[in-house]
Image 1 (cartoon, rainbow, N blue to C red):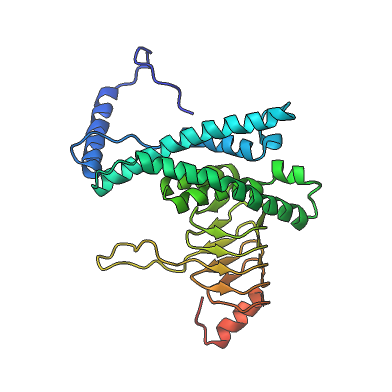
Image 2 (cartoon, one colour):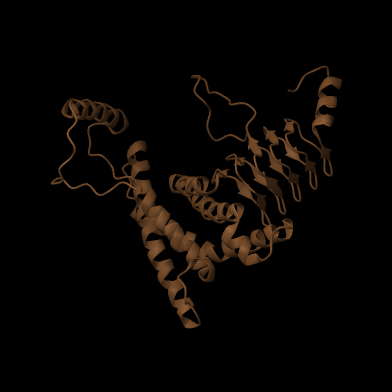
Length: 315
């Protein structure tokens, strides 16, 4: 964390700092002019504020595990009410900053104050449903790992649970129209766990990522109920489309659909808008770019056989 700046503090002496600061000033001015024109610079949403808000939200959802020690009886509800009020107040402020930034970049000049309150209120209303989904994820982790000794251990120790808790919060914000804040939350989870889930990904209940490091789930991925992934799995795009100007196209469907009860083992890459049928098992290190029917068992040997049978195309 950066230490607070104090103009009166003395700094170590290094030659040429004034020149370097001047050059950086010029570069900042050019960047700001290109982004925002000649007007005042907009305030930006704060990653630190969102980190604190998310921690309070998680503590409100699971106060026994992530709240302060010593909570009991009525004090639990009092703490949850306090944590929610504090987190939602921060969230509304950060949503407003994101909306103001978007209005400036779009040049519409709208007033986002009312909309930020609507988003924060709708997000609050969704928290019970998010909690219910997370209960199913936690139980899936416990039931899916023979090394798990208790639900409490899963909640406190498993990186996949850490990631899915934050994803479900981020996804709700993404759906409500605060994609930058949603992405901040997903990157907090990424930093904590090594699991990279875009907040746009739609994930069904009873979802479990075991071990987790290196898992990547793209923006338009759709994951059904009871899906299990292992470390190093990629649900990614096969190629990137471009528009008439040659720039990368945005917001098109490019990531896989995994139907219910699919298992994908370590290091597998499933790429493109393909469908993995219900109950399929994808073995480790498989590179898969075509749909497979329900109940499939896909191994490296099968992929190699299919590719050469088709005359060498596909990989």
